[in-house]
Length: 348
Ligand code: NAD
Ligand code: UD1
Image (cartoon, rainbow, N blue to C red; front, side, top):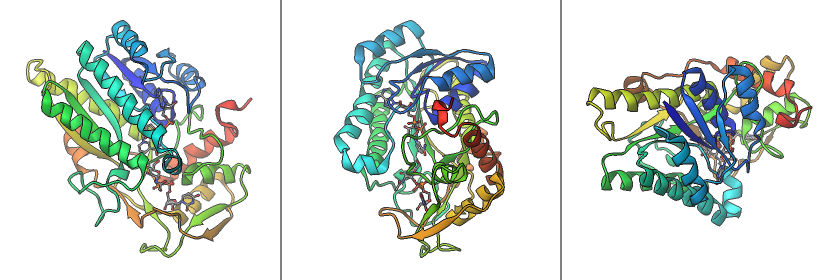
C-alpha cells in the first residue's frame, strides 16, 4: 500500500514517514522544502534501511501534483504541508491563506480528479480557541483567533463540505496538541529556522548554549503554578496515530466489502490527556540535560491561554491509539537530538 505524504520532510512529517516505512508501507513525499531539508529523509533511510520517493513539488502546483498522483497512484494522502507560525500568520496573512488554503484546494482537486479519496489532515488544538473547560473533547465549540488557526478551521470546513457533497471520501481530521520530542536515534528532530517561537525548541537551544535563558511568558495564569499549561505529546506517538488512522480507513472499508467512503469523516484529538506547566517543562528538561536551566518571568504573550489539554478517549476507543511516552522521555529524546545536532540538519 502506498501513502503520499505532503510536507513529509518537515518535523512531524519525517517522523511519520519513518513509522509508515517501519509498518511496511510504501511512501511518496511531496515537499517544497520551504521550512525543511531533504536531509531528514536521508536520515530516515539510514535509520530504517528503507527509502521514500521524494518529489520537490509545491502542493499549489497543479500540473506537478497531477504528475505525482498519476505516477504514484497512492491509496491515501497524509496532508502535513502548510505554514505554521502563529505570529508570522498575523503579519503576512495572505501568504498563509494562499499556501495553506490554496495548497489544500489544489491537492483536493487533483485527488478528486484521479479518484484518490482517502485523506488524513493535520489539524490543531488551536481550533478550540480558548476552551471553556479542560480536558477538551472533539465536540467542543471551535473558533480561531489568528490567521494560522483560521486556515486550520477553514480546511476542516472545506473537508466537511467536500464530504457532504460526495460520501465516497474517507476523511480523518487529527487535532494535535503540542508535539515535542524526537526519534530515539537522535538523528531526526525539530529544526526551526531562527529563534524558536515554541517553548520546547527554545528550551533546547538554552540547554545547548545557543540562547541565554528561558523566557517564561507570564506567571499569573489561572493554573497551579501560574504558568501556562499544555498537553505535550511525543512526536513519535503522534506519528503512530497517523498509522492507526490509515489502518482505520483500510479496516473499515474491508469490513464493508470495499465500500468507498465506509469510514466517512472523523475527528480525533491526539494528545496525552496530561497538562504540564512551563515551569514543569523547565524542570523536566533540566533533569534531561543534567543542568539547571536559567529562566526569567516575562509578561504574558498576546493570545496565549491558561490551559489546554486533551480528552484522548475517542482516539483510544475508535483508533486503538494512545500516547505511550511520558514527559521525561520527551525531554530526553529532544535533548539527544539537540545535543547531537546543535545546528539541526545543518550540523557538520
Ligand atoms: P514543518 O514546517 O516542519 O512541516 C511542514 C512541511 O510542509 C515543511 O517541510 C514545509 O517545507 C512543507 N510545506 C509548506 N508549504 C508547502 C507547500 N506549499 N508545498 C509543499 N510543501 C510545503 O511543520 P510540522 O511541525 O511538521 O507541522 C506539520 C503540520 O502539522 C502542519 O500542517 C502544522 O500546521 C500542523 N500542526 C503542527 C503543530 C506543531 O506544533 N508542530 C501542531 C498542530 C498542527
Ligand atoms: C502554539 C500556537 C498554536 C499551535 C501550537 C503548536 C501560539 C499563540 N499558539 O501553541 O497555534 O497549534 O503552538 O505548534 O503561538 N512559552 C513560554 N516561553 C516561550 C515559548 C512559550 O513561556 O519562549 C509558553 C507559552 O506561553 C505557553 C507554553 O509555553 O504557555 C507553550 O507555548 P508554545 O510552545 O508556543 O505552544 P502554544 O502556545 O501552546
